[in-house]
View 1: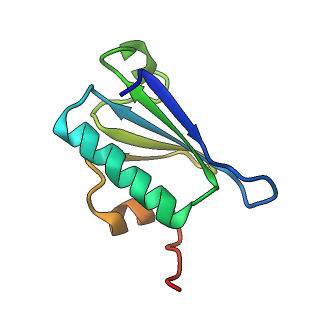
View 2 (view 1 turned 180 degrees about the vertical axis):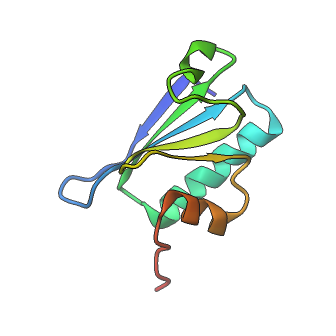
Length: 108
């Protein structure tokens, strides 16, 4: 996992781009699971409308202070405001979507 990996998937002309930041601690099972779950949810419900930044606090511990990170993994929704945080491996999709205030994509 890169120290800070950004994935920009915003397509011009669509709705607001969601800015998400996931704080992890290296390649722990919870960190890896949280990232995999988050990518899956973003592709299902925010495809083309999100920017994801992964911050490894083993590499950059000073970055935890800015978002007041007390536990890891922690997901922070920066945009749209208000800022929201979810702690854990993000395995409960419904809880994550409600926590981020994301409306589930409709099945075709």
